[in-house]
Image 1 (cartoon, rainbow over the protein chains, first blue to last red):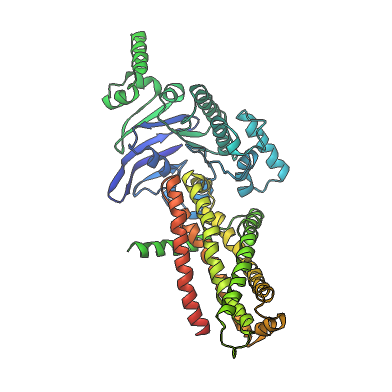
Image 2: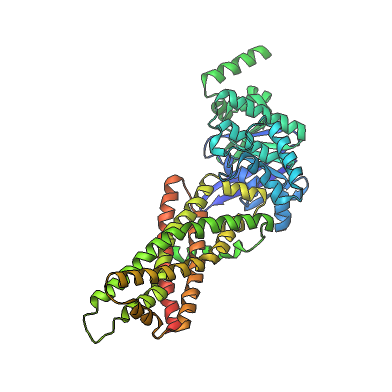
Length: 255
Length: 245
């Protein structure tokens, strides 16, 4: 579980996060949504420890990040997996090399143990024939799956995903969403996804956090988002005609 | 003020490079890869340029020796002094600032743009140690390339001088041995080692701290070449004054 208490973050004169508090629970897919410039990426990078908030605290299963020593922070980061928007695979390594990288860096496993683990996670993300290919030789969807495999290879407690569906076709995007949800439940990890994709919100959003101008505007479940009267949320989530109709049908069905 | 801030950031980066080392098993392969990319991969251009510059130095000296009192062996002497003192350590380093420096800036800059550096940091890897330290160690082999440059440059001068009919082989060798000061070799290699550190770190700094996209990677490569060259030329002056003045 991750508890966020009143965090603030600025860059020069720009006050990006203006006091966000929330809780992300284990075994759940938590989605952060909001318009571009609302502070989602900065918030995610604060959760990852890449940015230090000026005020407030982030507590990971009882461990307050700001109280940890540098070594403890690095140990904590090894419990985090991250899927970047552009996958961020290492160009100079093969698919297997990318997935094996965290094992080589942080474990004392033998080569055969590492290979077994790599095979297991690549199988889990349905990539069995791509071991020796380089990132440039595989599709965007496959790159995302490699990034997920790399993120889970160390059995993380926390999984962060920044726009995991960006640049993917709708069918592949759904596959990636389902894969993230399955992995979250299977490994009982705390998953936090930064997304613009409303399909993801409807598909896997067990908890949704809506940010606006660096503040938490709304939070709730995917069922609650249908009923909310919050104008900022409805304007953002139901900006397309399709979603307006979906919402209308949902409300009529409930009534 | 921006320059001071950059010097401060650069110094802090250098300190950070030596903290929290990467596992030796991984570092060893990274160093070997960088030796191959940065030093071994540059030998071709170093040999090519050294040969022709050595030859041109010999020809220019010969063509300007119009006074019959001055011995022809001076061509060998001038070639040796030019190549060992300045051409091999300084001129080749400026060429390397372009070739190796732009490679370092663009490769690290691309990793920054594509979030690969963030990926390393999130995993708990000291990205500066992982990326920059192997380059610094690999560049410790750079003096070997400069030694080859010295040899090939002088050989080029000998070929151009002897086969161009400017002097005999014996005269050239006599010139090479005239007033030879062994400390000049030490001076050249001290400079080379310092330039090697500069070539490894300044381009890394420009790549690591760049912001933006593909266009900015190109701009960072150009800026890094300019600054690496400027620093090499200033240090060359200071080191010459300090060691030979």
